[in-house]
Image (cartoon, one colour):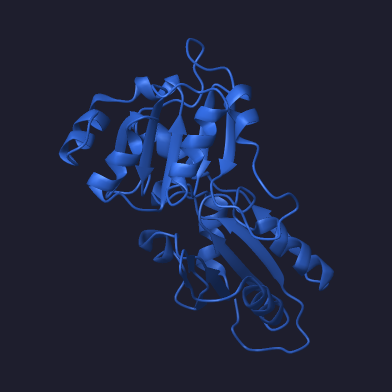
Length: 263
């Protein structure tokens, strides 16, 4: 595909899910788009092996957002996508996990459509499913859990409603998977216990899920805060809460012990 700028061009933006990190989990359609894209705008959580899939002809733009280290505001990123789509035929917005699962893909799609830019969404494997799987934890199991809730632990200011109803979540689902909840974990644990979960409810924290550096902690709602402090366990991480955590592989238990924490 040509990189010659054509101001009259109306290209298409592909919102591509990069998956949780393991390049083997990247979809074939997503990989093909990376190889042929004219422009790729990517997030901070996209792993280096997936960045390496981007074709040499592509313009690469880092729009990564990490807690306390935002390289670009959301509005700036959307404006870049609009501008590049008016110059190049194929623009890829590469997002960690799945674009529509706590990835702001819905917001970007709406803004692009309002600007008259064609959009196509390429789903990706979300970390809330993949990270537990790589740790040997099924989020559902006929003997342990017939329901699972995915929830963000980091709410946006000025959102459509002020607070997550943690009490309802505690009562409404046998497995709870929390994205981006490490920094707010003490409050989340307190709210879940207030909602009816016992202090002995199992919890797993999985950091850098599916990547070679994957780490995890296993504990209970009563112990996990101290474990996080002792292990200096930091984001990005997924939390899994419920009896399914008991099914975690032996490897997970060993790796938890290597971190110096209770498994």
